[in-house]
Length: 325
Image (spheres, rainbow, N blue to C red):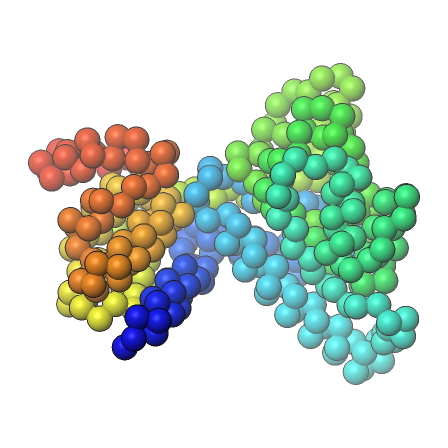
């Protein structure tokens, strides 16, 4: 293999290692089951109040993966359902040339005002925006037959101030139009759980009456069932790794199960970082193998890196106590 070929080969493997699909843990399955139930029950009629599910949890527990997976599933379901309704004469096909978009997924890149959010959603739908962004969004949603909007990183909205009040009202307006909204964010349940300033209280109360918090905890460890599920996650990684000199099966899911949990504290994003970066190091060194010595050299996110070495020292001494989650 030439140097150039090797460079491309390693790049392709790194990309493969980085594109791990959603791991259907019990935590993810519980939330997806709730979302499926909510979606099936939804009428998408403006005469019915639409609940707004809110995927909430700490950073790094896999919320965005759950949201994206659900958005993809709903895109398929709603597209097939629309085709069946047209086939059986329950609705007329669109003739205005608009691109049908049953689902849009918006991951907020930074803090946004209500107008900026409306414009962003129009851009995702490929719809021109007039000076009245609210009217443009309403027209876009109707023309594109949008049934679900997923808004990720919702914590970027400053719900304490006027923008938060306006976005509360925007979400209410979208659902009143018969479009479902799914929110996803880090530690965002406080928006509907704490008391607000008098000028914001009405909006908070309206959202509190519609938002449905769905908590995503990190993965536990310690009990037999939790250990077995953690091992299953590690087995998925074992099977996906494209390294030529790996140890026999079980080197990760059996031999390093407790080590990986103590290193990452059950945060799936940190586990992905640990294995992905170790894989890259194994490729660059030419060893094509991952072992504990290599994993020890991989720095992780500060939330889990802080205290990591002391936790591992306790684990090695047989004194580490796994927390009950």
